[in-house]
Image: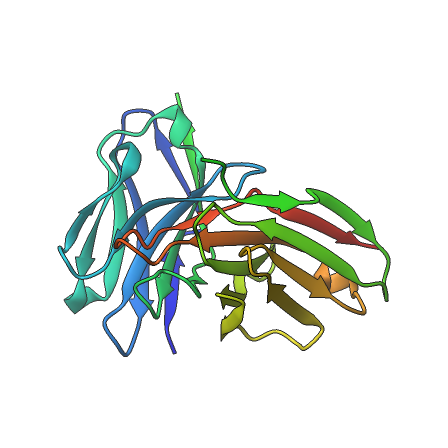
Length: 114
Length: 114
C-alpha cells in the first residue's frame, strides 16, 4: 500500500530563511507525488507534482521539490521564506497520473516570523 | 472560469440524521473526488467519480455514498450521522485531458454533528 510520512508537524522559520519541509513515501510502483498548501478556511492548492519527467520539480510561489528514489524522499524547499508562506502543507501520493485518489500525509504547519 | 463550488459551506446536524453535500466542478472537468478532513485522521480519500461512475473508493463505511450526474455535478450523502463524522468535506475536480491532470479543490463544507 502506498503512503507518505511528513516529518515534523510544525516548522518555524524567520522571514528570509530557507524553508525545508520533509516528506518520505512508500510505494511499490513508481509514485506520483504532490505537494499541496492549505490556507485557513480554504481548500487545497497544488504547489507542484512529480510524475517522473524530472527529479527536480519547480512549483508556484518559488517552491521546489527534489525526488530522490534512493532515499524515498520528496522534500519541499524554498530559498527565502515570506510571511505569506505561513500555512499548512501536505505531501500526497497517487496511484494514477491524474492525481486523483490521493493519500495525504498528516501535514506540516509552517510558521514564519519577522 | 469559475472554481469548484461546494454547498452549503456550513451544516449542523444531529446524530442519526442524514446529510447531502453538493459539489459543482470546474466546467469541462469530468472527475470529482471527495475527501474528509479531521484534526485526528487528517485528509482521507472517500471516493472518486468519473463520467457518472465510481472509479475509486477509499476505506469508509457504507454510510458514506455518492453519485455524479450527467453534468458532472456530484453529491455526497452520509446516513445515520455519528459524532465522528464532524469534519471538513472537500471536493476536488480534475481534467484528465491535455495532460493537465491537476486537482482543483473547493473551499469545503464544514459539517458539525451534535
